[in-house]
Image (cartoon, rainbow, N blue to C red; front, side, top):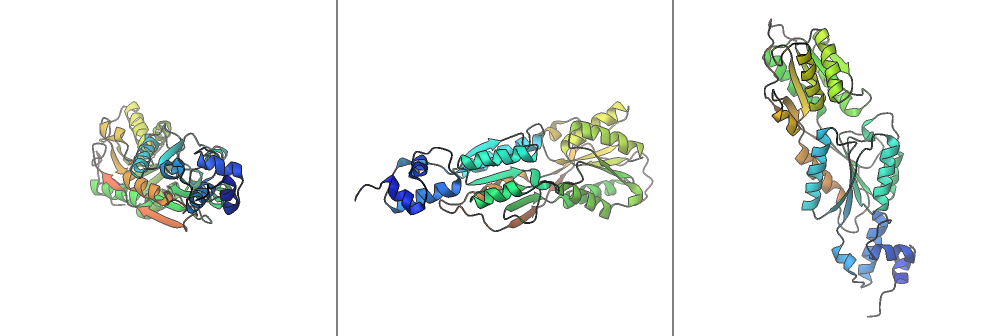
Length: 336
């Protein structure tokens, strides 16, 4: 058989010889769709370079930061699932703004990522553009967006059921006899917060419920606890475990005790919560399940680079009862 030339592959795929050369050499700088097209053409023409057999598919993983342990946990599980699927990963951290996230996605696409998983990204914000997502999809890069849903975008969306999380926490506190309960959450313009607030308002009387908007941090939880305690709350549900730990610090600084004077429920299920004193009652996100589904959604077989149709999945959380919740000190039996 005659030797397969670069120009033969280039003509078949309608790309330059330089692009074919980069793909066959395993170099970055070619998007996933083009890379898969070139490799498929090379195989069909009889080319047998090592890169055709040895190059592991590449996916990108994007998290906003690793200061919040839940994002470190997601990253750990995503990388583990990728390894199990024989995938290479590139990681981008500190994508706190739309511009930073867009730049990270462009770098990952240029490096040859055939799919990108984004955890709690800009897709969760109502007021941000989806143009950088659309650009990736148009270039054949599959997207899986975790914890947040946006219309008008062909991507896989996988989210923990925020409404169910709040209901689980409220049912637990109601069973303990709490009457006045507060909810501490972050930016009200984000998809997860809207879900939590909506569930809270539907399942707890407005007369006995309070909402504190802050941010998902230790400091945010600290401030929310002071606000909700001033409003007479005997229990609070937090939008993250980080917030819950900050709230416990605030209650202690008031000279009070958790859970006697204030019950606290977190959300996420980070390992620190189990080791905290007192151990944190929380609603755990099913991180392993989400990570497995996310990696599968972006790890298409060679040559299958087109974005899958839009799909939205919601997975149930789990209530984990530990030491930061108990009946209120002065329960009077009033039901919300």
